[in-house]
Image 1: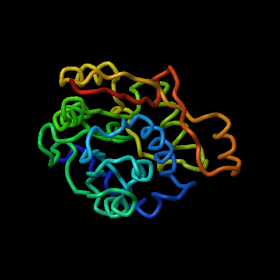
Image 2: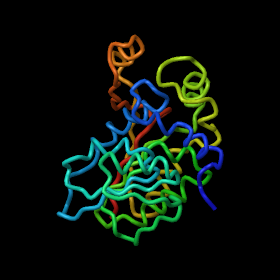
Image 3: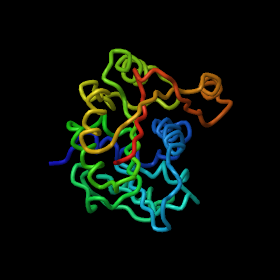
Length: 236
């Protein structure tokens, strides 16, 4: 059975033409992808593999150009995969992220951006990502914390205030937001010691974006992991 909410895939396909709209509902995913790319280490070999699960329309791809990786993407949306293939992904596959079509220990970097909060079993997905990582490989995740503050900002405000970059109502389900302590424990039990840091929009960029004076917002690290957070670790 797919780990992704069935209604989410249909809604997701309905946004297929907006992946690269800098003021559309998917724009914040691009900002986060750029921040995530900053944690990708240099490749350890000439044939190093980076796997991006729930890759969507390939927003991560441009940030990997020239980095020396063979970039593979996995998603359940065929429409999104077509976009990803055109934006820096060497190969894509329609697959369930809880049952990845990769051998154990075959991937140098595994990433999952803004998808764990949409699956009923995010920790099963994390176990699967740890499985495909080689020893010494890097795991990079970003998701939303299971806190009241996250619910207020990511749902009550983000989905209801009519501003550029607003996701459709119903995009998030607070019951699926990801417990930070459990995430660390599950990854640790599978050989990956994670460190967490928060991400937030740079205030100046946010103001300029809302007043239409810029097209992209830089996400910057913060000590608070109460809302949006990133997790990075190396497999032992």
